Length: 210
Image (cartoon, rainbow, N blue to C red; front, top):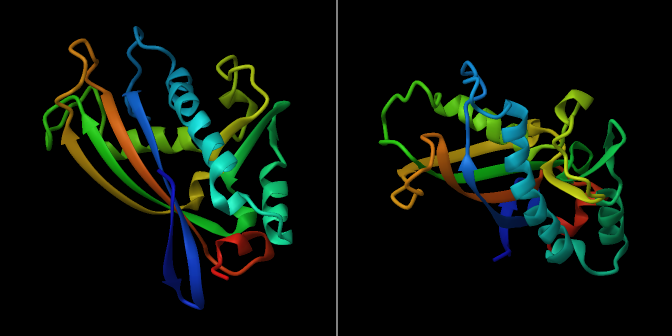
């Protein structure tokens, strides 16, 4: 369910754009030595990115921030519709540096190992989150694409760049519903996203209350 909530920023009221994302599957560490029997790291990042893509597209298609015919809304839709091109591939990022937005994430991570234990072949939490952040942003360089991108024209990502993540809250739980054959790095993620302007700008006016 998408929701819009009002709260106060330093210079006036804004609408917070809030929506959920979810993912279930492998979440490997970005820093561990690679097991030669595992898929390439980039392939695992794309598996997460591919799960997020249709969810972001649904937000862009249905959230009220992008509806209506006023000039500023049209400008925002136009900017969203301007692709980020990497190696000839087009990506559409919901949050971009030019929009003067920041992104706050609240994450429930349901893991397939005991809580508060060190699992050396899974990796520490920071490095697993780095993998997630890489998957939430658009690729920046050709070598991040290779053969892993699906052949679609409207590939949507949450972020242009993960520097837009300004706040993070995470809580871990034991995933009692994990499939019996799930690997130890299997997770179920429930992610609540909040986007808010960092300063007033014409393109992010749809976030402001009338």
